[in-house]
Structure formats: structure tokens, C-alpha cells
Length: 254
Image: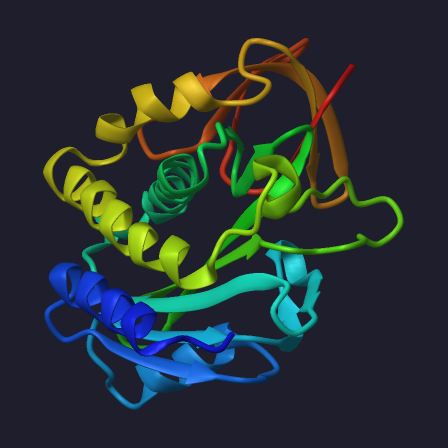
């Protein structure tokens, strides 16, 4: 992702407005932005250290899945956060909401959220969130948004922002807006925890109140997605009773 001087200045201004010690590292190509930021956390980097890459060759999604993005096809970024545990637990929800906010403002595209980390638009997955722990109690927030992806692997129902918006959307315009919206969502978390995000998340939730299938390690459980618990866990009403999902994959059923 090559940035013009004006675009780069806007991104840095937006990042610094939220994270006073913001630092932006731009890479043309890397294996994983998550690994770059984790290494920075190990060295003691402050909150706001951010890596953005034009191409990712060995990126990963949840549960170790691969996320490989050709040059210029996606917004790929990872950000170092240093927040107390009660706030860190809500970062996946904050990240999803911030992406939806930014996409709607920059591209005019309405998004839905699928627990725990998918952003949907136009019938496919537009973006994903990956939150991982890092040395020193830090959190690495990884975000990938499909900007101009021409094809997806077999079995993946993905979509691209240029397709659903009907026009190309600049990565830096989206990134600057994303920092601003993420700042708002993190402030909500600091002030009210997950319950402060739950109403808006639920309004945008895909599959809430409907039958879904949850894959938890080697278990498959069907039930009705009932809502969020106070810590961000998904509540699933099954034939055997209510189940709290703190991890796993949720699939929407026809």
C-alpha cells in the first residue's frame, strides 16, 4: 500500500489523536503484521505501535487459519494495545464495531457483525478481527479488510469493498477513519465495559435470535443465538440448556 504525503499525514494525525505515542510502521511485504507487533511488544513498545502492510504472505485468522493477501488487495494492520484485562476482553467487539463504523462512513456500505470476529456486507465476509495476547499483558488487535480481492478460496464466501461500494475505496482513507472510530469504541469500553457496546453490537448482529451451529474444538452444537453475556461471550440456547461460548466458530443456518 503506497501512501501519498497527504494520505499518510491524515493517517498519522488520526492515530496520534487516539494514541499519544502512536507509531506507524509501513511495510511493502511481511509474513504477518501480528508477528511484527508482537515482537514490538516484547521490546516494550508503547500502546499505539501499528504495522500496516501492503502484502501479507503468512498471515493468520482465528484458530490458526491462514490469511494471505496479494499486494494492494486488502487493508492489513495490527495495533498494540495496553489496557486493563476488563477492557481487553471487549476488544474483539470494539474492533468489529469500529470497522463497521468506518466502512459505513467512508464507503456508505452497511455492515453486519457475526460473533466473534467477522464483518459482513453484501452477503459475504468483508473483514475480520484477530485479537491475541502479547508479552507484558499487552493485546495485539489485527484487522483485515478486503478492498479489491478478485477471488476467494473454495468454500470461502467473501466479498470486497470495491464490489459492495461500487467504487474503489482508498486504504488510507479507511484507515484514518478506522482509528477515529476505534478510539470512540475503546472509550466506551473504558467507561462501561462490554455492556456499553452490547446494544449497538446486537443491532448489527447477524443471526441473533435465529438458529446457528457452533463448532467448539471437536464439538458441534446447534441452538438459538440469544445474545451477549456481560463479558462478550455468546449465549446459545440449546436443547440441553443455555450455553456460554467464549471461543469457537458460529455458522448461520438457512
